[in-house]
Image 1 (tube, rainbow, N blue to C red):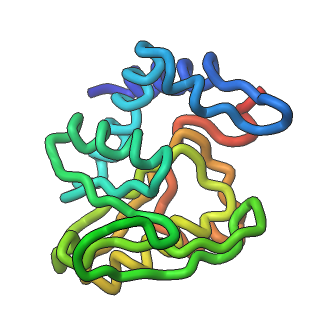
Image 2 (cartoon, rainbow, N blue to C red):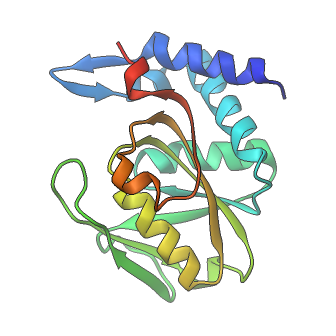
Image 3 (cartoon, rainbow, N blue to C red):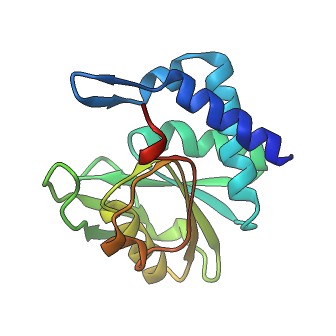
Length: 178
């Protein structure tokens, strides 16, 4: 794939992004087939540069984007569940720091889905406080894996979190949004 793929994903993200009553409407980007396809291809192009063994995704929008990126790269998906969702097997769990809504969450990963030395790329729609990405990096580390980068549609990571996170790669920044 080429950087033009990333440019197309960026264009579609900006073209379909809307604010609704002050809230970001990422779902409209995903509703349009051409936009969804371009965004997934762009995220896969970016994620593939870090040669991951797996793509991780946090529910809910991470559960939409990350498996599609994993399929595009021909690798597996590692699920990150929130707040006691049904998830059979031995789990590793962590509280997040406070998120952009002022909430803390419990995130969990299956211990048997983390192989020692595995390289994970976390794919999500938006990074702001970085609280969930930080928790996923800690979960992966406890399981012997490593989150090597965070790939997202929108990067608004705060400086206080950015220096603690793996590299963040995005299609757009908060400053790019209308």
